[in-house]
Length: 425
Image (spheres, rainbow, N blue to C red):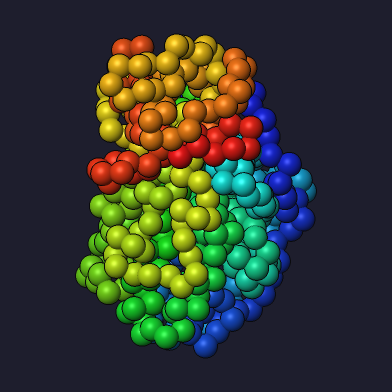
């Protein structure tokens, strides 16, 4: 169970559940007024309608590119605040805490790259909602709207998620992490670049590009989970498995098969179950934005988007702890620490300046900086903050950071140290 109780709640949650449900007659189809948003909800639509006894023919026609008839929506009315709400305030508090935790993770990742993270709003709505992306009912599930930079969620979706075979609070947290991942994509310029590129593509090509968008959001959800565990011990044993089950349960192939339809990969808009699990796992294992370039992995180049330039890899202390736990070496890491102790220079062979960094939570890291290949870090004192990038080598004492400089032979990626505004390469 996610250890969320008693933690900070986000101030970016809007609760519309006590204000009644908007009513509107809409057209579901290519010529109509509703547009499917980026998010888990669009593909979950098939399974949700299936479980709720709806017309799968209309929904599949919409998702697979056909026209659908006009449907008059009459969402259920809601009572006063606190009456008839799915899950009640406990679920709302849970959502608020998870959103706050995503703010902590992405705020830190952006700060490490010298950027500001604009926090998204999350709107809880009952049955239907009007957003800057138009009118949507709860049937489409959670979604992110780029124009107003908001995540929209009807809490009844958590019940539907259980019906899909993904119970548990971390499965719910994964959904929030995925939608926030779309916000990160929007801030980084991924969503605008994709929208522009789709204009030149066929429906099949557009679907393929959308799959890469959704898989990257899964990977970003994994990055959040990585940092939530490594920095704040938010997860307990079994939570990761809940997230993986959630990712698997809402794969396009699984939902199409569950709906009794033939699996059509060309119609996929979110990816197969195996793909969703794979990319969520990549984000969780690495904690790095650079590991989530689904576009490069598929040989697709987005104009004007460089993930590594837009945000720091975000591995830092967490990647060191993970490498230490797994006894890994030759792992590229970057982050920051406080100088705990300055050691005498190592003058055997290549000369190295050596000092120990305190990374927090009882973890230290020995830095061995080659001063035959790079300048010595000047005026270094205990208590100073040092930012680093280099190769991690495991040992029982916490590990050593090597190659904090350029390798003339080109066998190792160049690293660096930064102290008091000066970068040493």
